[in-house]
Length: 541
Image (tube, rainbow, N blue to C red):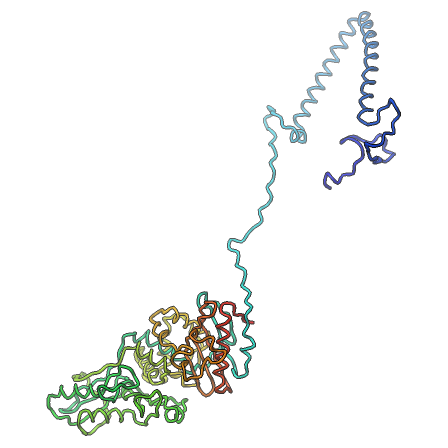
C-alpha cells in the first residue's frame, strides 16, 4: 500500500488511539465553521499547548514541596543518605552504559541514523540496488518489408499452362516471386545462356575455331580438317553471309594453291573426326527443325554457312550432307574435281592453309540475338571436348556442367541434352537462371558478352520488331526487359533481366509448359510487364 493510500486516523504518526475499544473516527476539518465555546481552544495543537503549560505549572509546585522534605531528612540522617546516593549513582551510570550500547548496536537505528562509531566492525551503509538491465539482442533483426504489388492473377492465366517461374531482386538476392522455381524443366532456347557461360569459361572469350588443310599421306593429296566452325562461308570475297565476319572457304583454297606451288592436287580427304555421331540429336523433330523451320543443321565438324540453302537467311532449309556441300565449294575454288574420300589426317602432317572464325564472344553475341541453334551446338560440343567429356551429344551434359562449376551456382537437377535447348529432355530450374543472370547483369566472369547479346523488348533480336512481343499494354516494358526467348513444342520460355519502373533490377525466369500454344508468349509478356510495374514491391502472394 502506498503512503498516500493509508487511511487518515486524525492522529500524529506513531501515536495510538486513546482507547482500543473505540474505533478511530475520521473527522473532517474546516476553516469556515468554529463550534468551540468562547475562551476554549478549538484545535488539537492549541489544546495540547495548554495541557503542556498546565502540566508544567503543577510539576513546579510539587517539585518545590518535595525538595524541602528531602533536605530535612538528610539533615536528620546524613550517613544513610550518603550511602543511598552512592548506590543510586552506580545504578544510573550502569543503565546509561547499557542504553548507549543498545543504541550503537541496533542495525535499525544505525541504518536510519549513521554514526561514526569506534566499533571494530562498522556497520556498512546500505546502497540502492540498481534496477536489473533488460537484455537486448546484439543484432536485432530488421522488420521484414511488407510488399503489396501482386501478380497472382496474371500468373494464373490459363495460357501459361504449368507455370514455373521465379523473380529475384538482383541487388539483394531476395526471392520476390516464386512458382515452382526450384523445379527443373525444359528451357527451350533459354539454355543458350548456359552454353554461352560454359564456352566463356572453358574455351575463353578470345578463342577462335580453325579450319585447316594439311598434306596427305601421299604426294598431291591434301586433307581438309574440320575444326567445328559452322560459320565458314561459301560466298566469295566481297559477299557477306548471314554470319558477320565469317571466314571464307575461298580463302582456304587460295592458300592451298599457293602452298602447293604448282604441284597438282591428286585427291582430297575430309577429316571430320573431331565430332562423333550421331549427327542429329534423337529427341529433335528433324522434319520440323531441319526442313520446315530450317533452324538447325546436322552437327558436323565441317560445313559452310550452317549448311543453309540460303547462306544469307536467318532460317533456311538444311541439307542431309553438310560435309559434301562444303567440299563441293572447296573443289570449285581450287578448280579441281579430284576424288574425295573421308578419312583422318596423318599424325604430324604439315599444315598448308588455315582460316579462323570470329572469337567466341562474337559467336555468342550473334547466336544469342537471333537464337542460332547451330552455333550453340558447335560451342557445346567444343566444351565437351575441351573438358575431356567426349565428342558426342551424350558427352555435353558432363562437359557443360563441369564448365559451369566455377560460377559457384548449384547445378543440382540440371540435365544438358544439347547446346541449343531444342530438346525437351533438357532440364534446368528457374532458380538457376535467376542466379546466373545476376552474374550476367554484373558482367562477372566475362559474362558481359551475354548481357550485350540479350534481345531487348521492342528493340532487338527475338524480342524486337516483327516478333509481336510486348505489344499493347505490355509495351510499357519495352526497352526495360533484356531476355532470352525460347520455344519448343511443349513450352514457351523467357528469362533475363528487368529494369523495373521503380529502378529495381530484377532477374527472372518464366516457363510456360505443357499443353500451351503460341498465345503463351503474350501471357508471358503480360506477367513480365507485371514484374516491371511492381519492381521492388513485388509480392509473392
